[in-house]
Length: 103
Image (cartoon, rainbow, N blue to C red; front, side, top):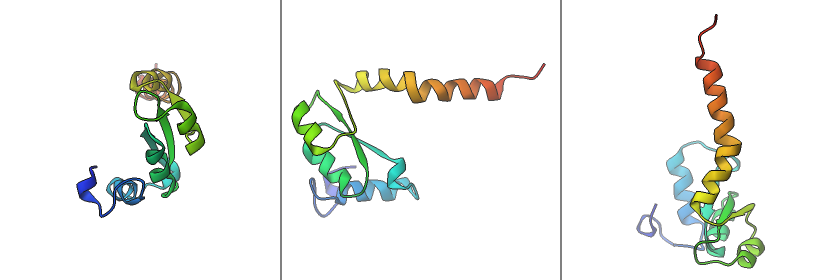
C-alpha cells in the first residue's frame, strides 16, 4: 500500500480501508496493523483495526500508548521473537501433528 493508491493519506482511514479491500473478506477484527506513529494507530482505528506499535520509528512509547496500541515492541525483530513463542510456535506444532504418519 502507498499513499498514491488513496484519495487521502494518514490519518484519514482511506489507506487502511483499501488494504482491507485488498485482503478480501477479512473482518477487521481478524486484522492487525503495525505502525510506529499515532497517525498509524488513528488510521487503523477508523476502520476498527487494532494496532501493534513499534518503538523504533517516529512515535514515543507515551504517544503510541495514548493512541491506543494493543501492544508495543522495540522493533520488528522483537515483535517476531514474541510471535514465534505465541502464534507461530502453536501453528508449527499443529502442522507437525497433522503431517505425522500414524503408526
